Length: 524
Image (cartoon, rainbow, N blue to C red; front, side, top):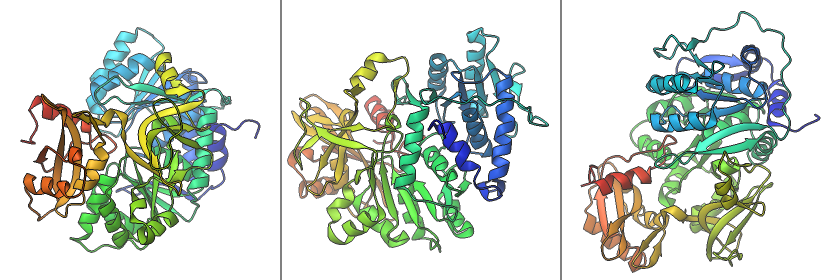
């Protein structure tokens, strides 16, 4: 292999498994073998190349979890082009901003709510080479100016462009919940390094069956490609539904999955109401947001010692820290506090914790987590100043505040932007949530800072209760007073049945805070 690129690793990895099943879409059980997946991707690659797609061109996708989302993503990489993935739950504002900045030559779509936005992009671009391709079978009414995709009867014999290590393979947008989305640039060599690192940290093979129900344009996508290059049989659900998820584990003897904590909590609660069989499971990867220590112990009781945490971010291709199954088991029996950690740095990653002056902090002291890795982004698209602010002397400044213990385990305390300053004291919202979540009636909590005339910001916690439990705000505040510092005790506790969630299933604190401050939420 002359060049270690993401394109070359996918090409070589997938070709090894021939007639083995590669992907099954649930619930209809439509399955593609590895051979069929490659053949279909090659047919689409030749189709895209005839449209002028190749190295250096941007191709945007807006496709829900499906066989098509995998096939088209693979085909774009085979062309050596840059994928600009967009999630189906993105708002029209975010889609509009991403299209106008990234200027894709082709948009491949299958979502009705975004038709008008993409039509506007097509008309405003005034570029005759820009094309919108609508995928059939997704109940979308496409305008006549869109091109309805039809499978080529045969693959046109074209030379697939060979990407270089420096080519841009992925332009992934992040941070668009309330601000302007930022385009994270990943090179071919960077994604290749991330793929290799994930394979080292997450040993899977052709005996594994992976179930994915979170959007493939986010963390699940990294696990998807890491799995396919190892011969794993991947099962894809359009979205997460707890009952269907538990049933799928039993029916298809699933061995591995990825969950965000809110999904894990729903599964734990569901197992208390129905018969279930999760004996086939060997790995549950979780991450994307802090997890309750108490709920993690419950997960052990339901699923066994199979938990594996991954800490990462879009800017570092998801591979920063890992908290292994054996480390979970050791902490469960010997040091429950360590269950709060996100583990230790991955093999290809260096991690430091520094203070405001850039000095490395001592164990048990708080500092910003900075990272150096071959899987790091190249920078933010068309944002040189933000890139220079985020990447300094080869180190990526994550914006996460953490602490390292004497054993080398790293604990995420908060995001810098989520830190609450109340009466001049720094309050880390995740620490408040950990205390509140220990209350026996609490299922999940979210801590936010709200404006206050005296303290600047007041600590406010929004709570969902476990089914069948009742609790008052005074009880929760009293519970916190007995267990944490006075300045971290919530001033306000509110209850509601559900939280606003991001497309990945994390509690959307920005939206929660915005709704609360505007006074239009159901909190009151």
